[in-house]
Figure 1: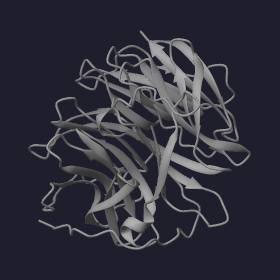
Figure 2: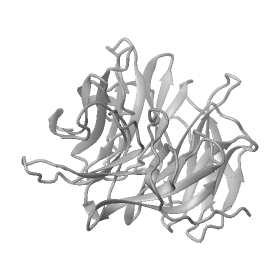
Figure 3: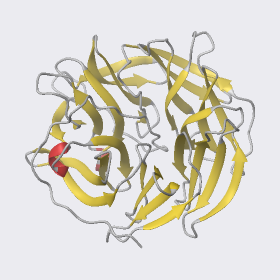
Figure 4: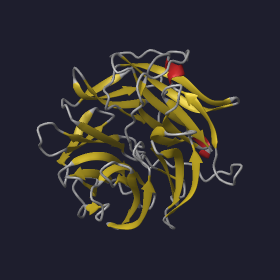
Length: 375
């Protein structure tokens, strides 16, 4: 079995190109309740340079919530090395601590932290194709190879932590596939085609054990629902039927089964929309302006009443906004950069202590992989 190597935090190096960040699913991880800053709302607690934790130029690949702990970021150098970096809040402000160094992972790598503290990295290896790299805290890794080379992948962990659901878009233009992998045995337990046809951009587990999937189908953003057997439940829901285009982005599901999704709804991606779906129909829709440089990731408050979404565009401020889902309107915004920025993923800190947002401010110092702490 391959081993991964523990490393220590070292000096900072600036990123050579503007940070790009992909949306990921939060699989129902609850964000914080609203905080009280100086203006009566949440506030930016500080930032931390993630490059400093690994000592060289790094690409931010994913950010994952940790059960009973602080979020962990997955970074790679685009070639031979990757790192897991814990992001938290210390006595002197935000901290970034390198936990493990990993073998090289693909640019499509997605990170999940399991209940026992193990790290699960799903990615396309240049040599073996799509694989699941499971790394326990002691660093001794195991690999489950699926033998496929997808063009796009999305994952969601079952509520019992036993099964990883994977949606793979294949390069031969055939139907995308839903795959259930038993993490204990490393065996594929079930497969099914994605219905309707299209590219699954995000996947989340529903309270009944089924799945919710965002599907990019011919320029339409569709929500598809599946049972635990991966068979479709009901028909797909167009999340932005009145928009000229629909590009699905972020996805989360509340404890009562309400689906909360984000979508880009203009050709230039400047316009976005946050949508809730209840009982197979769109319930609320909130317009988001100036989101072209945001992955539009979304995290829910513990009570499921509000959602947090990072938004950014070159002509707009980089912010983390909170949306009241019942009222269908913004209730607060936290400025993350003095000017423009590029924003990616969002995940909760341990103990309802706040949120971590990943991205980069666009300024004279050059872009750096940054974690923003909000509380």
